[in-house]
View 1 (cartoon, rainbow, N blue to C red):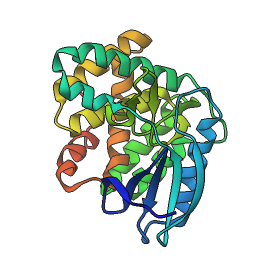
View 2: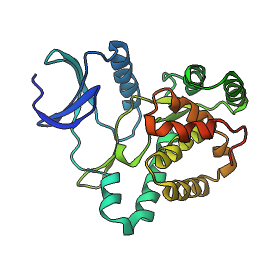
View 3: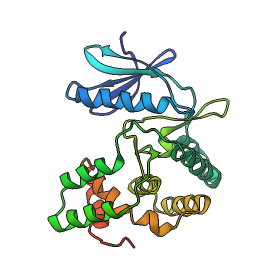
Length: 249
């Protein structure tokens, strides 16, 4: 197989389309273990009834490791939101409903979110006192086993021509507390410069799920610390501000 039709590119990966297949090709510097773990996460989520692209193979393409999946025809929810801002509330409602559906599932073989967060906090560029406070807070949070996407944002949702909703990019999937995954989505809206949308999203999710906003907010410093490890330079100031507080306000 030869990758030809490039549709997306980052420093460490490229995504191509070849007919009805999507080829996610990784740079030579990318850890083989991380690639295989991503494929394993995805395969485990495939066992649910969620709409996600199916893995077809894991192979070497043009000398680089690649995951080959079904290509899903359609547009992302982010594209729809950008093209028609007047439908923001409608699309946000769809986003929240789909996230709640994802979080309602259990995938027992996935890694535990709590373990991942503890490792990220330990590796974060934070002083010892802040790391201690974050580890302590994480330990005090309820232990749940919901399916958590880890990067749930409108760009990772594809709406097919027949209206079906597909969730893509399961590389960060874990099992853990649903409100932590909500805090992550809230943070992603903020980091993308959409503070008002972040607040609207949080209020809507909490209303639909009957979850206290304050409970989700208690996860924000933990999630911000986990993001710090691989944060873009422009994100670090905001993330540090959130991790520096004991009680998020």
